[in-house]
Every structure is written in C-alpha cells, then in structure tokens.
Length: 100
Image (tube, rainbow, N blue to C red; front, side, top):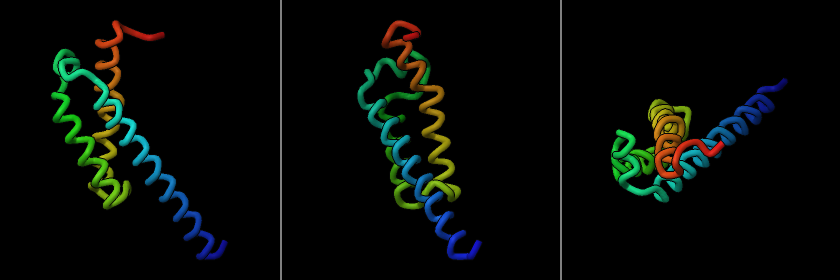
C-alpha cells in the first residue's frame, strides 16, 4: 500500500471517530436536558446543571480538538461516565425500575 492510501484510510478512521464522538455527546446532552433535575440528586449523582456543563464542555473540546488528543480523550471519558453510570440510574428512578 502506498503512503497516500494509508493516509486516506487514517483520515476516514479519524473522521468516523470524530463523528461518533460528537454523536454520543449530543445524545448525552439531549438526554440530560430531558430529565428532571431532582432525578440526578435522588440517585446521588452530580446535579443536572453540573452534568450539562460537563457534557457541553466535552462537546466543545471534541469539536475544537478532536477525540484523539488528551483533552478529547478526557471528554470522551466524561461522556462515557454519563452514559454508563448516570443515565441508567436516572432512567431507572424516573421509569420505576428496569424497562425490560
């Protein structure tokens, strides 16, 4: 493979990661906006405004610097924590347990 082909493949991989990171972050922001404020404190998590701030700063970092730099990596971790830890607990308390 030539260097141009490798660079093209890397460009598309990085673009896909960037789009995926932006999509996850926007999804987390939309979810946080739609939740009641008291649900966050009821499950012993940070308040809704703090989580919205973290998620919005994460989105700005990802847009400005991408997902592969140190700050982008930290931003993706913050979004991941919201989606893996906060979102399920907030959903459970608002929907009365598991939806399965």
